[in-house]
Image (tube, rainbow, N blue to C red; front, side, top):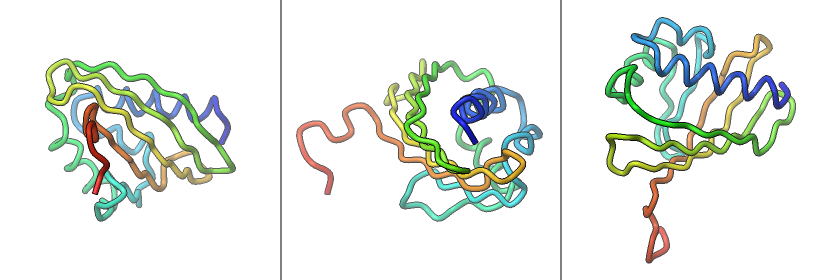
Length: 128
């Protein structure tokens, strides 16, 4: 994978998120995907389970948000991407995430690990 391929994958991720249903998940994720919504959560395994998770985690394909992305590193088949998402209707509205993505030989995501942080999450104290 290279920077351009990773950016294209992230753009496709956003397109799939904004699409109704979950039938397009197979265009970006491997059938045996291992997806962690947090480094501390058990992985969601397989496209069917991921589809259920996605449907529970969004208000719908027309959910208003803006996403900015920046590649931090790409080495072989692994990428780290910094994401900032601004949600129009959510509380908290601003999140900054790190995505650790491993791709298979077909360019599909085989493992996905998200490190999400909400604006103000640690203001005034250190995490414990």
